[in-house]
Amino acid sequence: MPNLKKILSLFSFMMICVCATPSMAEPFTVTLSANGQSRTYTYTSVDDAVNSVSNRSLRELLPSYTSTSPATAQFDLRGLPATVTYPTSGTTLVLNVPSIGLTRTFTGATRDASEDQLEDFFKGQEGTDALKQILQELASSTPLDPVAGNPNSLLSRMGDADFARGTDAREGFSASAYQNRNDVGFGVDTGWFSNDVADQQVTTATFSYARHMSDHNASFLFDMPLTYIDSDGAEAYSISTGFGLRLPVNSQWALTPMVRVGALGSPDLGAAAIIYSGNLVSDFRVPLSKNNEFQLGNMVGYAKTDGVTIGNYDINYDLGNVRLKNGIALNHHFETTPIIGKVYFNDSRFMGDNLYNEYYEEIGASIIRPFGKDNSAELGASYLFADNYDGIRLNLNVHF
Image 1 (spheres, rainbow, N blue to C red):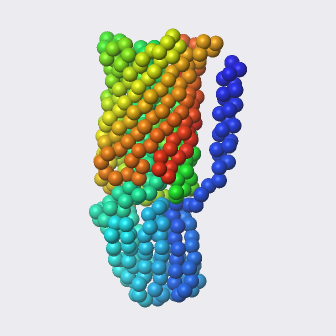
Image 2 (image 1 turned 60 degrees about the horizontal axis):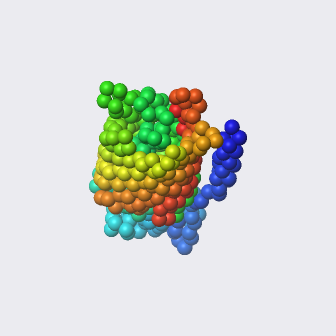
Image 3 (image 1 turned 120 degrees about the horizontal axis):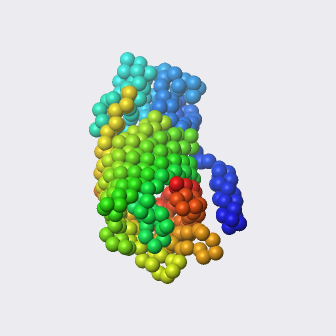
């Protein structure tokens, strides 16, 4: 197996090179100003960033500040500009988000009490309508929202998972030696991505299962991806479960309706959501020769976010989007070794509520190596790119 060993060596080398990529700034930046003095601090947590305008924190972070000083904090909330001010010597605190014309005033018995009210606002305890405006603006104008708006958000990854299941080379026709059988799989993919706000490392572990129903020549599909996102120290976690039914139309064409529900939480980024989606995936194969096959994949569907109430958090993005994904691939059987190779190009687009990346593309390649009758391993790499957002993914999948 010399070819496979060379490929694994190259895979390891790529992992080392990418992991050595330097990190960018943390996702939250605050510039504090009072009595002619300014200082800038960065944070990985929205709570820590908001806490910087408490009376106690201001005294520690800005030596010129006193408890009656007018003060200003210029925030960069993972790409969204905002301003928090104590405009007078009193306790009133004013939040201003210019891009959406939002101004909110908080007045407590002390400045610390006013800051507590601001913190409660970002948790949704002061009402969800104004916070919803901020969340939707984050999804539409910044590249770092973990719920929606970029290729690694939960909204995007749920659709990508459905498309991958519906166009899996192992579920195909002439290019697959594994159709018409039950299948258990486990996969891991890791990616490194850059944007205007922070570097991200994204890792997903996926369990999958396919059961062939011989009486109907169809296959029941199930998968469960679990994803971890590290955005320069700010962490987000998500999980989704997908159910589908692969229905062959003829010897070259299959349709797969998929339904999926996902959940995400990130106390660091102040984000949480439940998402429901439904997609219809078309997989069309055309044999080009004995060893080559052209593959056309198409998907259309809809995804809707729902609110989440956890502890002190009450968050609702209230987003709804139509998803289109189209891809082409060439599958090749190598004659000198039992390996199936694949190169592909995918295009994803969204319609509906505004998102930061309303389209993105991915180009990649993979190899599938059978081991015995029912087992196989797949190794792949891809480059994903969009406006002000790009990165690479490496993946390894095993089936038995």
